[in-house]
Length: 137
Image 1 (cartoon, rainbow, N blue to C red):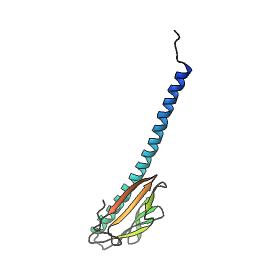
Image 2: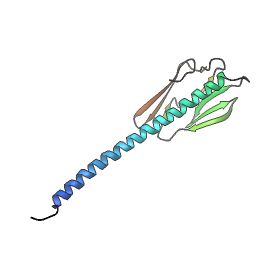
Image 3: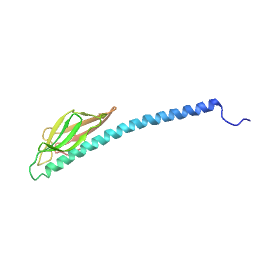
Image 4: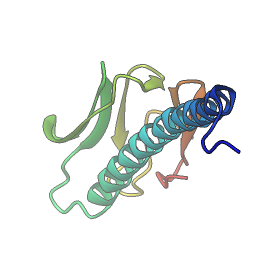
């Protein structure tokens, strides 16, 4: 008997390893898209909630608003930006621009009720709903 592997066995093992590696890389790419999309949605949700909380707790009757221009989401007080989030290039937001003002009494968004944002990346969607009272789903 001869010790060792035949050329066919080595090629078969290499083929199986390449197939498994390719599937793993494809799944990692999809997983990265899911992560980018969800983290973007979470960041925007937290900005909406923070703007609402500031508007409700507002003692100086300041005006708080959240806006999207290009790929930048901005939280503003009396028109002056104090928080921003740059949306990753792979993520698109629908509507592509908005400017929402939070009510100082209820924290609700005055310019739409209810409001909805849809984030999309590589065929995946994440929806952010803002109820008429400003609470984020």
